[in-house]
Length: 352
Ligand code: GZL
Image (tube, rainbow, N blue to C red; front, side, top):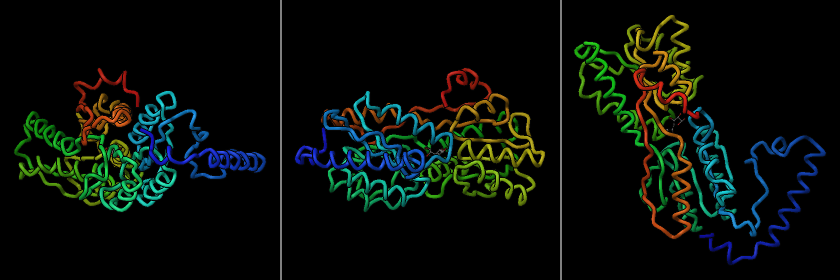
């Protein structure tokens, strides 16, 4: 269903003006200094604006960033689904992990009167005002991946993502089973946690999920939980600080593979071994290919999958909405747990 506003107003003259302006800008740019993106680095890789004749469904997508391999795979999954061939014009904005950039982008989508707004909230709070503006503009909002904490759930139409509390619990249950197999279930176990972006649903829910299990084990001691923003650089920095502070770490829990890569660098520099035959048990989240290779080599003990391939789910939701059908509010994607025992059968087909 096209946005009613677009039917009421003849956009022909506006479109003609925009096209002339765009050409003029392009000519100046090409004459002056390289590609369009060079002049306007914030450009969202704009293709030509869809003409009415193409009758494309225009979707504004505020992606929270490009901080991790997982995030890139998530963006590519959605861009691969919302294509012109499938009837969409996707306007993509990278917020560089800043909520204020997302709010700006969403306001831009509202003023452009897109048909749908899609976004992955960098953090859970602070969205009521801008989503109220989208609601008043009559633009449905689809949340992808992370959640927004909202009093009024009519401010969004649907959410597609993972049950991250369950992901955290899977990590705890795996650790329970592993320690039992190793005959260490009564041992005092010291744990440090590299957390994701503070206030993000991934950080909040994975932490909650693991603690749901950990509280059953008084001999498990979470020495420290420290945010490392889901990046490799920060993961290394925080792991170095852990190693300076604690000499008897038994378990490292890293809330995404990118931070795990950084933590591994820090531990390798100190000659600390991890994994199946190592001194330190290493638990990671996301299950990107590079990490699964380390699971296969026994360097990472277990990787809890967080599935970024959400494009097909979103495509189905938008098609239903276009047909006037109702959609589920919550749409949870399928996920696995990878260990040395099962990972090889999935490695070959891993696309990210
Ligand atoms: C999880 C997603 C997280 C990933 C990280 O759903 O939000 O953000 O685990 C990414 O890799 O940065």
